[in-house]
Image (cartoon, rainbow, N blue to C red; front, top):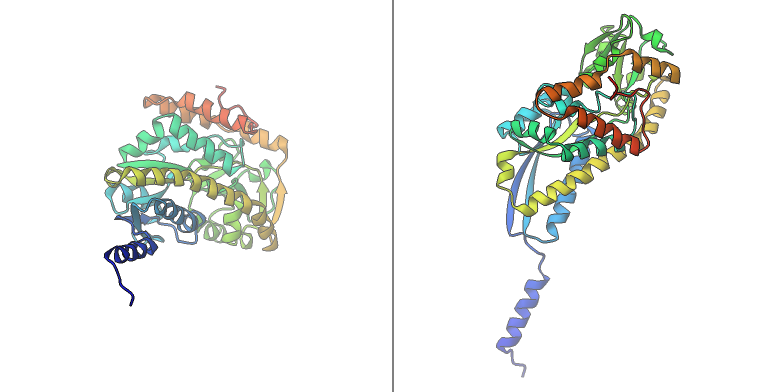
Length: 357
């Protein structure tokens, strides 16, 4: 006859417990917001990369589990409303499109204010993010908006110019109305008769189609996604440069209550997300050019002489950017030199020395 002892029962119970999957001790809710749709590159990769990677790392200890609530495409805020939405606590974590907030986030304009330097999204993202960690300005600006800075993102390889009529030189842009967003409208200053018209990515197709503008400045991935070739079949490959436009931030009040382990994971994954998205942007760069051509577009490369003439003909917007920060008590001049130095070390020297007066 088989007897069951107390010790054997305890052993069986322990074995059963050890066989069960680990259960997180604490669940944390996180509301993520962006006004852009889920199919936007940076949003899609927040879902496909950022969130799963945070979950994976937290599962290694099993101390915490995040219950994610994703809200995109205007369900809580419009694209321009993420900064305020995070500030007010409408979302806990958000992807702020910084080009919409040049007055509140002036230091975020560092890449946009230095055109014709680098078309490598990876190098620009890394350089800008390192500047944010080495100088207080960017963090100070987000602190003022009740937010904690996590990482900068670059989702475009470089701005190009897409036109409804054939263009092959800077002279062909004279007298044209050209759509853009943020600081890139300043690139047109110095081109005789060229007029910048403010618009957004989702508006450019209609702006060109209706004749409101003759051209638009955007990047090839967006041009192929929005079928810009149908209305602007000529791309002037000017390689104006990659620009940081996305920053992941967290509501400061929410952040204060997070456990240190969760904070550390979010900070580490944000840097990986930065590099991941920039890498995808570069992978898409050539494919997008091919798609644009397949859709009926023609690409004309701007000569080196014309690129230099364009860069040297515009105001020194980099010096203006630095001076704006200097006047607010931040080391703008040092930040500019450090940023361009990082790109130079990475192998990217511009056609104009933006640090020169």
